[in-house]
Amino acid sequence: MDSILIAELRNVVEEQRFGARPSLWKDTTPLSETPLGLQGRTAVVEAADPSEFRHGIPDYHLSHLVMPGQRTAEHAPGSLEAIVESIVQVFEMEVSHKKDPATWVSMVTEHFRTNVNGGGWASAQDIADTGSYNVLIGDSPFYRPESFDGQHDVFHGAFPNGFYWEVLQVLSPPPVVAFKWRHWGSFDGEYHGHQPNGKTIEMFGMSVAKVSDDLKLLEVEHYYDPNAFLGSLTGGCPVAHN
Image 1: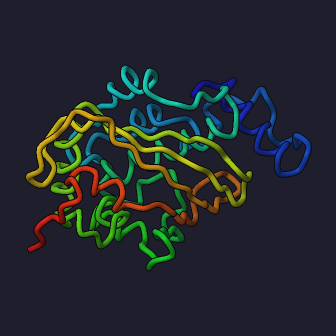
Image 2 (image 1 turned 45 degrees about the vertical axis):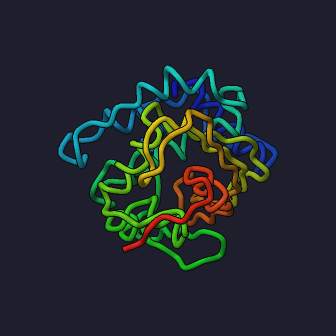
Image 3 (image 1 turned 180 degrees about the vertical axis):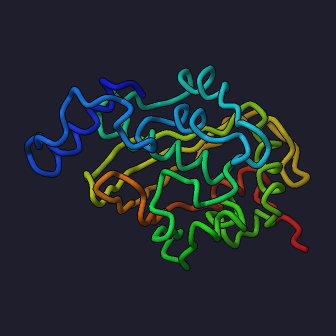
């Protein structure tokens, strides 16, 4: 995300919140003065000490090569949709690859919490300990909870050519951001013993995020049907649970 996009980010958010651009957010603000979490996923990865990552610096080359041709929504640079998508990309990278929540810049770590479909809340530390897939899927007949690394192996194995995510529409501006999204990938690898069919598997959902004044995540509620998505990977057959 370049300095022009960041300036527009600030303008869009402030215009939608207040109908005007306040003087403290100038279009000439240098990128170095912008909070790191708003500079985009690549900037956050490059700014991190390599020791912060669980298994080395993460590789997102498929997101740059494949995702543009498969996405269904295109967002103008600086649009609220582009801003939200960038923030979520940083969040996903951190919860998946950075082991210590104290280093996560996408959220106010000590206050952050998330849930799915009105269920129980999980903290940043819960995600770091349990894993985002385990937390965000919860109990499902079509998924068997795994270790932190195991959960990623399951989905990386099922979607070896990438498992992508895009914002479809933002329904409300900060400080409470409601948005619709799409998550998809080509089912090209085995999933819990079920063989792939090469088809594009999609799921759709909606999330409601509360953010701070500098657009760090405070709380995120997700609403989607995990069973419809996961059941399509198993042909509707439940996965054996230990």
